[in-house]
Amino acid sequence: MNDDKTKGSEKKRQNRKLQQLEKRLQITFNNKSLLRRALTHRSFVNESPVPVKDNERLEYLGDSVLALVVNEYLFKSFENYPEGDLAKIKSAVVSEVMLANVAINLNLGDFTANHTLTGAVEGSRAANEGCTTCKCSRPK
Image (tube, rainbow, N blue to C red; front, top):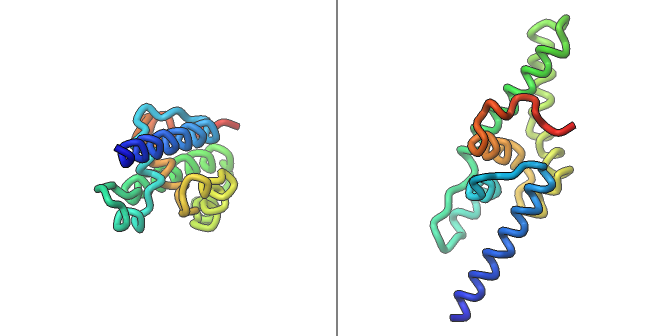
């Protein structure tokens, strides 16, 4: 019985944290399991007593969505730049270091120990809402 209470209170705590993250991101997920999965690093899967999926597939999707959004923005904003310059700018913007800084600025570490989750969170957003809603629609 005590285990059930502990599991129930842990689930409530996790749900509160997910709600806090949604508020911080200004996104409401219809499918909370996608956000929970986005925050699940591969190393946790091996430690978890229950089967869970890691965030790697969402990170794959999210990295592609981020690249698409950045490419669209650069294409529209820098009409006179050649393709090579646009590619260099995009590479810098979506680099691991830059995305880690975004994750730190969003305090994703409050929700997990991994600071390289920006792509996975964006992937969960794309899977939740569909890629058409991801086009340069971020809050300003």
